[in-house]
Every structure is written in structure tokens, then in C-alpha cells.
Image (cartoon, rainbow, N blue to C red; front, top):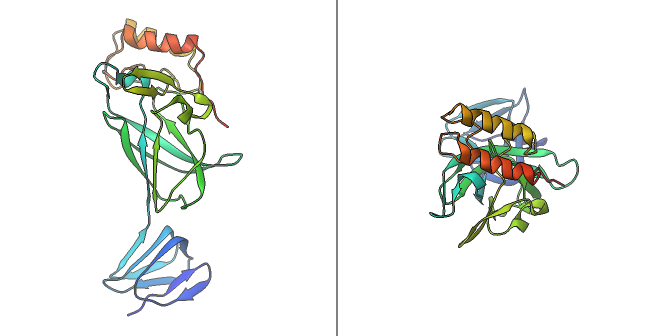
Length: 241
């Protein structure tokens, strides 16, 4: 048996191959046959034609090892954060900064999380953008590149790790910086509307996994209102290129 692969109109026949930084794109009306025990991998796999055989067709993924803290979820006494999910976007390094890929994962109590992407290309720079359900969208200070399908970035070491220095210090020992909490309605600015939402839910003793719970303890109270109010006073908002 053989493999017939169409890659941008180039036909080749081999038993097993991994294409680094390439696109495997076989169109409608073409076929791909992979023998048992063989594998065909590319950074991007676009499946439009037929696929037969007992082998493996796969995409090569890239992993971002990220460290970041949400201000309200972090406890400076214990030096840990309540774990929560965030979505990370990869954007082009130049205007209009188009979104290339995004994925959702969890930041653990140490602020660390692994985010797996399908579309980034090694050596190409992308801005890293973090979005959390009740925090300010935050961009990396500069565009970053994957090497060998891997990238490590730490937002917490300094406010300069964020574009426009858009973070605040949340711990003195160890020194850590966190993403502003309180953008409850996710409009990019912490303002009176967010304060009102938190205040109303605190008055009603709302509990559970709700956006007005900016401390992550599943209960809306004065502590949540205080964080939102302070950041609204300082006009915390998204800063992007």
C-alpha cells in the first residue's frame, strides 16, 4: 500500500512523514491513503478529500506554558490563587492584530497553565492575550514566538510583562503582579456599571459561579465590591497596541 499526498498541488508518495511548518491541504475530489503503521502529520491539516487506510493523520500542536494571576482570586497571605479557566488568544504582531487561534484552559493555584494551539507557526511572532470572565483583557508586552512548538511566558514577574504595564502588584513577597479584576460586563473598562452589578449582587447575597464574584469564593460580598470599586476609581481598562 502507499500514501498519496497532495500538498499545495505537489504529489509525493512515501510511507510516513511529518511536515514541520507546512499545511497538509487535500481538496475535494482528491484522496489520501495511509498504510497501517504509517503517520502523516502537518502543522495544519485541512480535510476536504477522502481519507482511507489504517495509518494516522494528525496535526502538530503548539503549547504555551503560561503563568498569570487574577488579582481578586489571589491570596497574598498564602501566595496561591483560586484556580479558574481563562481563554488565551494569539494575535498577529501587526495591525489589525487578527486573531490566529484561541484556546481555553485552567490556571492552577500557582497561576500556571498549559494552552494548546493548532495554528501558530514556529518563529512567527504573536501577541498573547488573556481573557478571564471578570478581569481586564491583558496583552503581552511584545509579540512572542514559538520554538519547536513550545513557548513559555510569565505575566506575573513584572507589570512590564503586560502591554502598557497594565497590571498591578498583588504581592510583595514574592513579588507578583496580577491582572485587574472587576470587568464584570466584559466591556473592556471597570466602571460604575461594574460596581453597581457587584453591589446589587452583594446586597442580594448571590452565590455560585457568577461574574460578580471577583474573589472566586463563590459568594458575592463586600470584598468583591471593594475590588471593583477601587479599580473603577483608577479607571482600569484594556490597553492594547
